[in-house]
Length: 124
Image 1 (cartoon, rainbow, N blue to C red):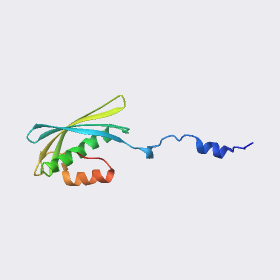
Image 2 (cartoon, rainbow, N blue to C red):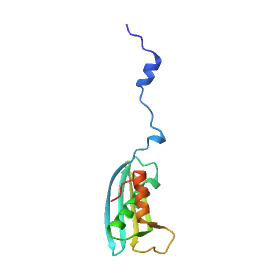
Image 3 (cartoon, one colour):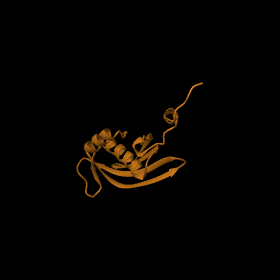
Image 4 (spheres, one colour):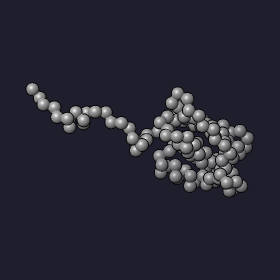
């Protein structure tokens, strides 16, 4: 007859996920060229902590797209975030340009793509 100690039983119990276990599942990006330098990014992900995670994914997509088009900067116009059935979605619109545009919500595409890579957020 085997004796099972409480320590062994505890080792077999499932663990409860913690904030450190944040493992997002990025579901992809759809890019829609609206007009010349005006671009819409539709992104989807699961396991997001909050709307900022989905917005960051959209910003990373916008930054990479900006570089792909040969530009260096983008300006954020708006982002709408929704969650349905556990899937977070963002619809973000940016203008892209070769020089730093006017406005408060501008991004340097090269710097942003580097930051996204360091954070493990995929781009286009």
